[in-house]
Length: 172
Image: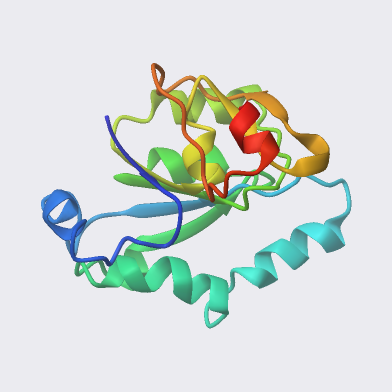
């Protein structure tokens, strides 16, 4: 298992290419897993999926960098925590690309969490997708700052995204 922790959509940056070029190629299967706040309301689930549909700004921001490595667009699928087959989509991937806004509160059920913990390929995380890989991480939002439990994939160091030397970031 290998990890790439990013603050922004930097996958196509020249400095990262030599590290990922051997892992990312035309036949690589990528599951882009969107961390979203779980809701009982179908309209909200559909709204999240609309934000990442093909042709949207979010879709392009996540998929275009992968295409620079030669990955076929047909080999890139999206999954969400509310998907019935989220675990199957993760299991079928070579790369798990976890994305979430830094301020999202998410709950991954035990089955989904276990599937991520058992994943043995490359895991790429952006923003919250990077943070949740830690044993624990520090939420930096001013009104809700504090530690949250992560997945426990990585430990021994702290990760802060969008560091601006705010009081809560310095405390964390």
